[in-house]
Length: 484
Image (cartoon, rainbow, N blue to C red):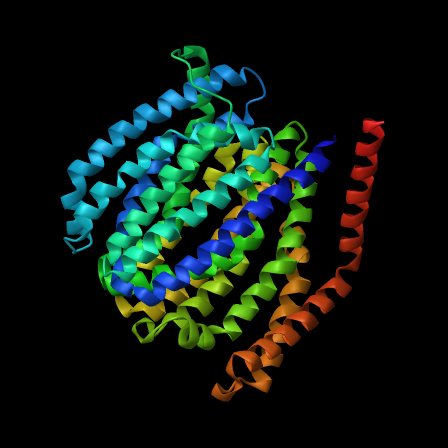
């Protein structure tokens, strides 16, 4: 089976896993949003900031290094497991001791016990990260589908009854921990690999050499992913942090259903082509064009639906979340244009290039956030949108260095979809949306607009679509020849 055919097969199972998890996940999320208030989500978000930060160091980039490695896999996996577990123990201990200081930073004493309890999540993740990496490395996403399916349902089954009985933010904490425990258990059942009481020191230093860049990149990625919420939580309090983070989660959830399945598959595919930067660059451009064809219509649709989302999905306590969703939808649509660049850098064995791409734009993000948040959440959101362009420029500059791709290549890959999508948004706004429409009227207008938008994009990008179809047919034919 050719690499492309294996990648397509893997993408199918990865996509199914993401769709299953991101179908159940949004339902749980929406139910909990109606049962809880922004402050509950804000308290848990503050604790999650710390846990996610710690997990960057707990993994130390070793899972990515293991996937990229092509020899001595068994010995390398053993090193990754024990090192992850040891680092996890140290970090969990530090978090438990430092919880009061963390609560002081966010000006809310409720955060301290939440952080201490959630530190168990680091240890549970350390027990299963090696198993996940080995399955991804082999492009064996079928078992991971079942893992995602089972472990996505468990947090909801735990959190919703607790929320109904008035447990507040503790319902979210319990769901997270039970879900992580279920994931660890299922991965050990699905993966045949088991750790041995041995440590190959030569493999250790080789993995750390690669993993340090992946870890540093992950650390910068954490700053990108959480720095905004940290600033909002510190300056504006748990309510606005919950409002902002929940709106961000909603938007990320919508985009993630489509795009998250492709990232582990692309990383594995890029890793197989690591000795041919030209082929990686060509695959990257094909990916970017496809992303733009889907991301921009999603952005436009969420902007148009911002009022129904606020009025019909959330309760009165969530007033203002519609504008959060609208602005972040546009930001996410633009950011996803370079969403696969990091996988290409790491797949080429050059994770430090992704690091430098982030370093180029991180200072502008930080300054923009700290200055703008003092003027309120709306100004902060608009600044957040402007900062996305700094991130795009940084990624484009690095892509030119690594794969000799021009900035014009990226612009040409997405400009048609952008123009069509936001022209359609203007068309929908012209017809307007009235409260009398109800769900049925809103849905009919949305489906009509989306269908017309998709049809126009498919027409102007017909050559690209034909090329993808030809690639699939060609690789399917090669696979059949090998079978016979």
